[in-house]
Image (cartoon, rainbow, N blue to C red; front, top):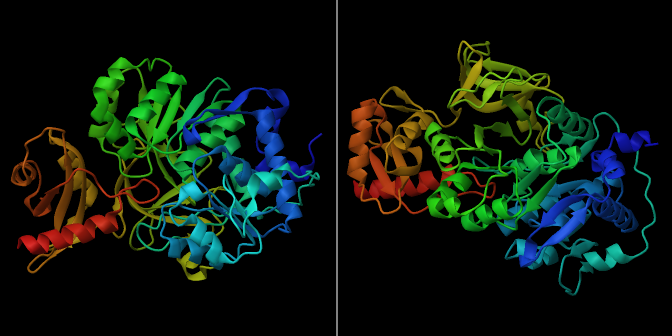
Length: 518
């Protein structure tokens, strides 16, 4: 009989599967170039050992523990295992600068850290500068650190999970920081447990499903989109240490994955390997989801042409708010360009500049998933949350059938000579050009117009298209005021740690290049 404390603790969310399918494979881990298999029994035992170790090392319930760990099973073990002891894990973005990581760990007053030296070039230096009393190290021995495996091998005294209040914090993910410093969202056990059950209730996964995770585990796309649904349903997933397009395609085929999800860049990159796609047996693959950033209809079409037997969909979600827009449960098809309609059991509003409900405006959402606020950020919490409503910062419009369409971030829209320009609309036009593979549009300063659009573009391999060709195409096909005044054709777009296009870097590069071209 489960204790009430276990039932209310996210660390035990797949207990029911462990009891029923203890010897079933849960994770196939490809870290380090070798295959490691973990069954549900293995995972449960290792998480219990983590809970025992964390308690033995003096971490008290409610204290925060830092995780600088890459894509490997130890991440899953420590993330959920530390929650079993009542600790609050901070799964850190391994692509952030060392100074930013150190600030986050210090600001959160972490009492323990676990560090994977392979996850960050400055990992060991960060660990030493933290000067924590207890820092665990994976894989290698180093003075001043405790060995994770040595500590795990010590006798594990069972830890009774602490009482969990309704608003008790489970973990603390950080927003991507693409538009400012990363902010720690306060996510609750109750909200996260509600969400995994909610997903299974409306969009169920099967114990026969197998996902593929190639994006960083610290990102919601991996944890919320694959890890938790698969473990809760008794399925399994393959865990890649990093994304590489041909290795990703090979893993889909070799392990007969039925499902995978990723950001737009994942799909754009593997579409450059259509010859390899044709060589592989991907018949087990049934669905793929593109999300975490703007998705163009052209990209969805291209993936479906390359994989005609696979259902491809667009998703929208937030670190601190879940996925409020989904495919309707009544089976209605989702129009291209829309992530869906309002999801059941989630309240959704579009709020205009006057604070009134409208057909176009900022998306507000309310449900048990929504964070309680932002750690040590009372002013941001006040600005972003009103009576439980999360202000997403995203502008959407809604059609008569109830489907939502992303227009822009509140801070993305800009005025060009008095005309409102939405970067996504210009990007959609660029994507309709047959030679354009990917594109991002940002404003650059202009002496007369104030701001004008500029674009960074990836062209199709072998293409001879020029910047002038692209500008002329936009002038012909779209409004003159919104055509990119400057186009930079590049081999790759800069990404942040969450795999999204880093618009801040793009804008800085375009501004510099545009100024030099004048």
